[in-house]
Image (cartoon, rainbow, N blue to C red; front, top):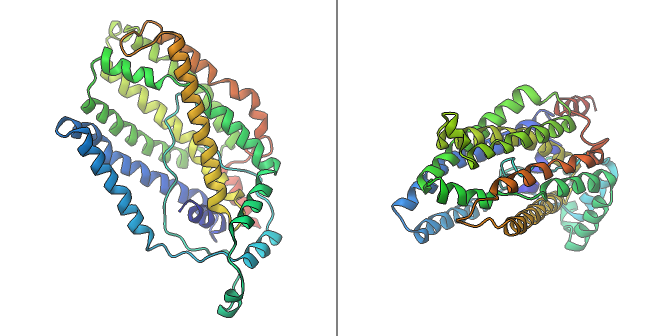
Length: 358
């Protein structure tokens, strides 16, 4: 499904589809999160964890059933070779930037698309060709990864996403120290999902003409001090200011969710421009694996820091220090933002104009 979305975005006749389709996919994902967010917490108060997991396990089966109705034309080896020889490498790659404060990315979008870029052939011509095998796709993937326009942004992605996070310790703080229950946490997710929709709208409305690199730089810089605002909650200083704990949590998550969408959406457009024909899903899955692997590294580093500082489910004396370390360390990848030179210097609108001119 990832490959179909990327393929349709890259090969669409209307260049505006490149940004619109990605926004539609992730806006739809936000709507789904909005619908399920509240019940994720409230159901735990009337059901056991086993029953809730049973319900959530049934939903992927529905997705698997829908997959049977996807109409996708297989890419043959001959078609892949001809397309590769006539296409030029895209100047950018997909990456999903995120500091320890930006809201975590969602699963890749699923949508039913047809491959409109395949070279026209008669039925007999296609029957005589061989579908691209695993070896051909691996070789094509390796050739793509060796391109500087691919591995340089991918390296920046890894560095950015691998910064430590204090989310696990902070969750214990909210539940054990502040006394926030699953129903309240469900409402927080509900508001966060709604904020993500606002972020999708805000990007399309105001940031499509801003260079991608500029968006990533300033969203990172803005997320660090916003993340440090959690110190007010950790030290209970918000109560002295007359701000209830719940209201503070809502406001913090809303702002960071919007920033997360601002940073995330433009990179999806870049993803669609670099995937070579025939290996869209393979390359997209590789990029997501890099992202998820980096996220795991960041989580493990955060766990080591949490243990080293003596932060437990009942001892939050050094939680403030942990928060400071995680937020400040989220800025160090900006030292390597030069890896994006020549990649993220264009805005989505400029990419559309160039595509339309060609």
